[in-house]
Amino acid sequence: MPIAPGDIREQLMATNPEYKHLAEEHTRYSAELERLTKEAYLCSEDLILETKLKKLKLRIRDEMEQLVARHERLRQNL
Image 1 (cartoon, rainbow, N blue to C red):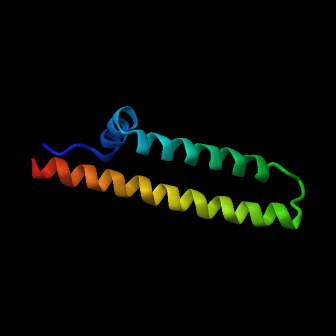
Image 2 (tube, rainbow, N blue to C red):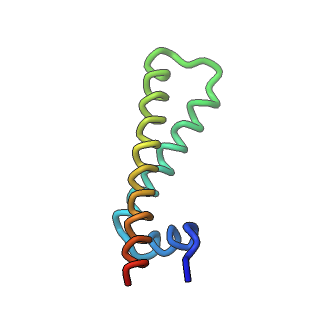
């Protein structure tokens, strides 16, 4: 019986330290981006930081999705 991706993510959060660490980083980057978007004016350094944070979030999300896919493949092979 296939497991929904959301269930896999919850399971990984509970059992996989790497996935949990990535999720925490993703949350930190999201919070920092949220803080930046509330600013009335962004200096050039903030604009650069915003772009960097967006790229980091995407990279982290991709790594998290790779872990989900790997976990799903392993589960299917059992």
